[in-house]
Length: 210
Image (cartoon, rainbow, N blue to C red; front, side, top):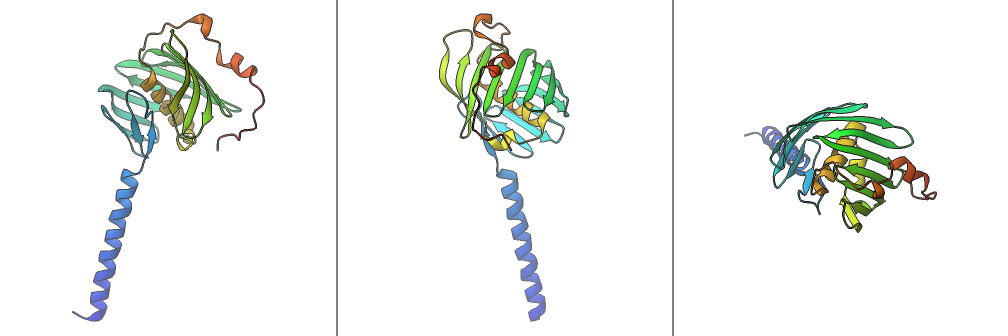
């Protein structure tokens, strides 16, 4: 074998191995979501996986199974629609000075408001009033019982930066994973509409999400 042919062969093999390695890293790299919940998950650009969940992620939706329940959702910059756990889903979305989602997710009522470093949300029977900390949110959770103080929701800022429909779906999915019951009942005396709570917040020096 000539020297030039040998060098060409080695170069081809080196490029092939590097490409395979890059592909493997791209396939396996991911961020963790809901690690302290009943269903800790890993999210990549293409998949969401957990102990009993396997979902394929597209630019405009996701499909698969969450906690062994069927999921088929689609989104754009205005709404999320489809089926979650064999129940209908319809969330209306808006984005401006804050991010909002309102409607139903798998038949459970959802209200979500994220503004600067604050998240106020209701998913099913649980209400959340939280502030951004490293790796997620920390604050109070009320599931129509004793308040959970110092409650933590794993949701990294890299997921917060994803497009609106995808981000709202992932955050709602994470909160669903922390919600032990999907009953729509909730203590009205201990739930204030998100906008009313945000009006009471002091000005924050924390940076806005990128």
